Every structure is written in C-alpha cells, then in structure tokens.
Amino acid sequence: MKKYQAKVLSNKQVSKRYWHMVVDTSMIQTPVKPGQFFHIRCADTFSPFLRRPLSVYRINEETTEFLYLVKGQGTIAMSQIKEGDTLDLMGPLGTGFTLDQQAKTILLVARGVGVATLAAVAQAAYNQGTHCVAILSARTKEDLLAAEFLEGFGATVYKVTEEESTSHVEHIEKVILRDIFSQYKIDCIYTCGSRRLSRLSQKTANKHHIQGEIALEEHMSCAMGACYACVCDIRDQEKIKSVRVCIEGPVFPLDKVVME
Image (cartoon, rainbow, N blue to C red; front, side):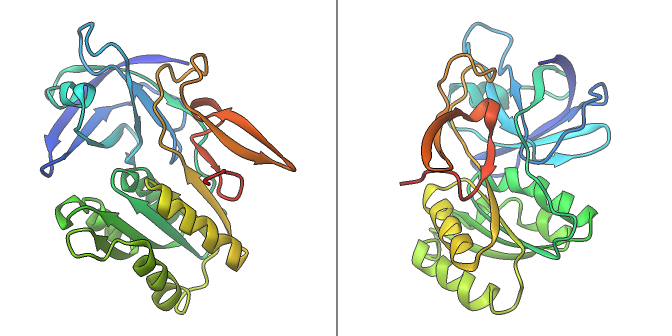
C-alpha cells in the first residue's frame, strides 16, 4: 500500500450535502479502476484520527475526482480542505468492477453517494462503447448530482426521489420491468448505495439470469485488513464465509453477497 502527498486542485460544495474534490494524482503509476477507493486523511490533526475511504468518482489521466457526502466529523474536516492544499492519501485500494468487453447494455442501480461509485463505471463503459441505463435514487432532486455526468457519457437515466415519492422499491421494480427490460437487453447489473436496492438488483439478476456486481459500503478503519471492522458474509459454494470488504472487496459478485 503506497501513500502519496497529492495537491488538491479544487474542493467545492455542489449541493446542500455534497462536495466535489479534484486531486492531482499524476504521480500514481498504478491504474485506477472503477469501484476502487482511496483512504484519505481528513485533516492535519489528531482528530479526526481515522482516515476516510472515498470511492473514485471520475478517473482522468492525471487527476482523480471524488464526490462525497458531508455528514460527520471526518467529512466536515475534509470539506475545509482548500485548493492548493496537500492531501495525504493511500491507494488505489480494493477490488474494482469488471466490465465485459462484449456487453452492449448494462444497468446501474445506485442510491445516494453510491451514485459516485457507479459514475466511474459509466465512464469506463462509455470508453469501450457500452451503453448504460441507470436508476439513480436520492432524497431530493438536488442530490441527483451525477445525473448530468452520466448523461454526458450517453447513459439513459431514470431519476427517483423521496421528495417525489418515487424512490420506494415497488415503484423502482415497476420501472425496471416496464420501462427498462421491455426496451433493452441488459447484459449485466451493477449496484451500490442501498441495501434494499441491492436486494432488488440481486432478485432481478437472478430472475433474468444476468451477471452482476455490487460495491459494498462499510466502515473501514484501517483499509489494510487488520482491524476486521468491515466484515461481510458471502456465499462460497455451499458455505457462508466472512470476508473483509477493504481487501476482498469492496466489489463482489452480486449473487455471492448475503443480504438477508
């Protein structure tokens, strides 16, 4: 695991709850994959002590972008980082998403900040000529920050929110069956950000015999597999076993993750 001192090019508030950070990562020679994350030191102080994992939002040749929700001590401190400051980060870490080169159309199902994780998938899919259909779920329309970003990569985006009473699972399931599967042949499903939508994605993938992947959001204290704070259960043939999300994940085959 390598640690870097990276220059912050911008760190701006883009909605009431979300911030967008752009970091110069030109010194990192390791390719960054969608679904991977960086472990970031929030402030040059002893408090908050623990780093915060941020999934990659957009991957460029010399920069990496993060979209993050400000809700606790760590991310509040992170929002106070200024342009030109030096960011202490480790990464890229974890197992990323796998994109089938032969896939024609894929479905993204994301909730909240999980949209940031799947945005990098849409970018990679566009680069290889794969069309994305996306269901983006959020509290309010203002929180649907990545919608235009995905549409810029040619994605067909369905937006659902609590504000409009359209984000409940029953409605989303109707959208999938009525509007999406009736129009597109979906080759793979990718999901992140909501346990209930992840269960729906798993159910849909099983029903239609489609492969899928899920990025799990767990509290990662060390990101090195030492603390076992981010353990989840997966199916391994006929057995259930516990794995560390930071090391074996955060991306797993959708049909392997236990979500009961």
